[in-house]
Length: 346
Image 1 (cartoon, rainbow, N blue to C red):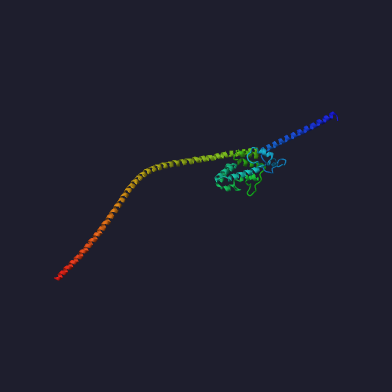
Image 2: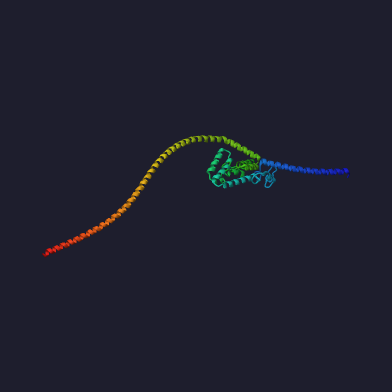
């Protein structure tokens, strides 16, 4: 082989090496771009609804963003809480977390408050919200949390893929279309979010498209509630004004009664003071009389003792008089006897 041939061969080898390097770089860049495109697709559409959802090529989407994949780590970077592979798993986690949180509340009042904060935003009409509030305040907690209760109803659609209300009496609930399920899950996760961290997590789970659509839907629903709410507020205002006038008249009447009662009370206080003074005077009189009675009792005792002594002396004197009289009678008899004897001797 000549010099020209050897030079050409070397150039061909160098060209082949360069081609391989360019192909490798192109493949790596293509893979990076494909990953970013796929990541943007997940950002817009969200995670797959369940493990059965596939892409246009028939590959399960969960294999692209499942546990411990690079895609999952990127999507959940900076998001609080555990990473999940599907929207269905997130709904299950939200359901269990909320139920545990409700059951851990210290009393029924706190449980009802949390139930209202969770469920009322999911109702799309003012009437449904008011009805739901009435149930939450009136029903037992166990009834609210039972399988057919208002807490479980919003999760049935997302967990089972079926509408919560049957289309006909006794008819089974039809499966929702996947897009409807996505929007239903977005409604559930966004509506039940309690803080910014849960809103950020819902954005990752359902995707920006359905998240924005749900916010728009909520905006429309709230806008439709405004006129009805204004009517309710106007009615409540009119009722308040009427009741306020009646209550004001009652307050004025009660104030007059209070003033009369205060005047009467003041008079009774003056009278009470007079009676207390009289009672004090009578108590002083009673104390003086008690002392006099005690002194009289002492004098009576002394007089009684003196009387007893005099009675004893009188009794002794009577006895002495009786003895003397008996003696005199005996002497008189003796004298008469002697006189009779003298006369008989003559």
